[in-house]
Length: 155
View 1 (cartoon, rainbow, N blue to C red):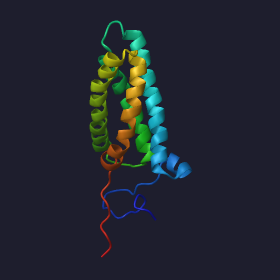
View 2: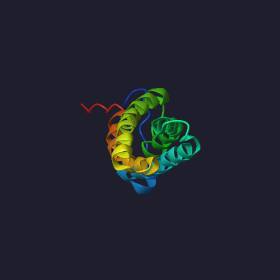
View 3: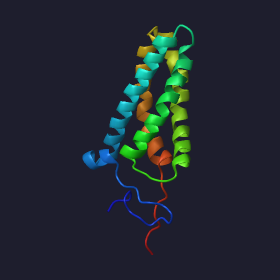
View 4: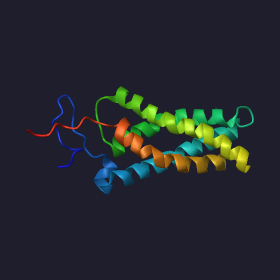
């Protein structure tokens, strides 16, 4: 039995694999699939909101709105389909949000940099920036957002 499915931490339910891990059996691949879905949907939110409001609000504000709309969807999918944890919803959401604030802030810096230096449309620039940032979030979520205490070694 692997570390994710062992019981032994008082008051904690063991982590059971999410539906994707039962099918794929590799957490990294499951994370990438959910991340790819979240990236596509988050980018679609950005594009939709930019097309609706891009003339009236700056694209960094559109980015923050799209992020806020996608956050609960992303959290739920990672929590249930990849990491399959239970309990601790509010602490998990808090940690998940903290981990996701880092890429948001990076995105808020990189998006204008790419738009202003490359001359690319904000939607195209957002796609490029998102690809780079998505790769970095796996470690944050794995080691911080959905962490669970390790059971103590048997004595």
